[in-house]
Amino acid sequence: MELLLLIPAITAFVAAKIARLRAARPESPSAEVTARLEALERELAETQERLDFAERLLTKLGKSGGLAARDNVTRPRGLTRA
Image 1 (cartoon, rainbow, N blue to C red):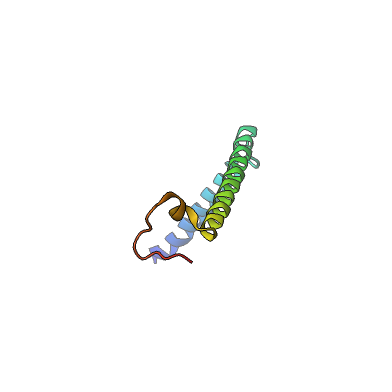
Image 2 (cartoon, rainbow, N blue to C red; image 1 turned 60 degrees about the vertical axis):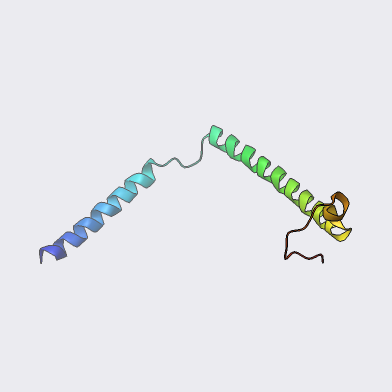
């Protein structure tokens, strides 16, 4: 019986705690956070462009005989040329 009274009390306490946390949270990030996020987004875009370039270069080298043939690099066992 006491347990049945305890469950609504705990639920009300948790709901009040969540409401206080939401009220204390700032609505929009600060200018510093926004600037850092934008800088990270630019850096990520640049990294993605570099990755795309490297993938295109490796694909091109793979189709034309690749680095293995030109630089006398041995291929690991199990890898075959396409």
